Image (cartoon, rainbow, N blue to C red; front, side, top):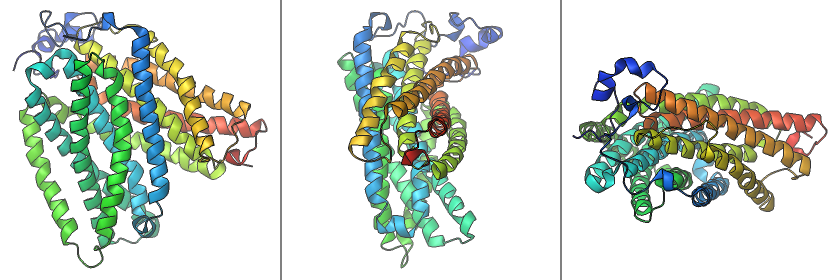
Length: 446
């Protein structure tokens, strides 16, 4: 394979090997950090020709779509949580956030990776190889992630009660594995289509791909999980044949797809590097869950706003990381910490958050009155969260690049998990502050 393949491990990248002493140097303008040769300039989309207003519109529209997808998933969950399978198999409720979080990371890293390939011209040269490699990669990851999420849900349901139900465990594993596999295949094809079309109409895929992945991912995964779990629940007490077949098929699919992805030069590095960030992100998000568990007891209305602040913050930092990774892959300078794109994203926090918190108020999804003091304190927490995330994203992506890791594979899971942790913590502080200054609505502890 030519030098344009996105493998940056120190053992396989000749530039990383020949200049190993330079890796520790902070000068990012050095050729040592270039993935492509100087003759292979990024085709089609030129960052130096990007209009700030057009970029802003592209990002804002895609972030709005992601936000409404998040609201749609919340409304859907409000309906399906009353279905018999959710009432009688409590672990399914525990499975939902774990599976959505893990699957969301896979889809956004796929979108970021494919956006970089679009900028490097690989879609023109090796589209079929890219499609096969990435679909097999995400199948392998999704099935394992589905099994991991199911095991986490089974464990969390078993520990408090001390009762282990084999049929429920089979139901959870089969539902999670089949949902993750089917959703990943469909969403993978959609993301490839979005990026190919974006490139052809000269829209920067970095501006739209990760938010669209987020908007479609939660809604699709939740709908499929609810439907599949309900179907399996009808027969789980009389026969476990179908769940056994599904789990066995998943066990066969993992090594098969993993082997194909490993042999594909576009996905070999992603298969190697992608596991630790995803599992670590689950641990970090769990810390945010502990904070949320404490704050929900004291401030009833925090849950719905937690979804909004974490969703918007996570989508923004994923978009930022995707763009910065593409800059590094295409041999360009990374710019200042608070460059034009970071400033644009910070400005978008205000209208974006206002749209969604007032949407929540309009559909009566929260327990709060949106008073001026509440809005000011909430917006301060949201802006601070995004500012911290964008700063961390800048340094984390560059640090990974210096280590020879591909930020497309590793950065987004950490950043979205940190977004959950920061958003939940800052929101808890905001609600505590509101209670302390006398804004004692139902949502802040009255």
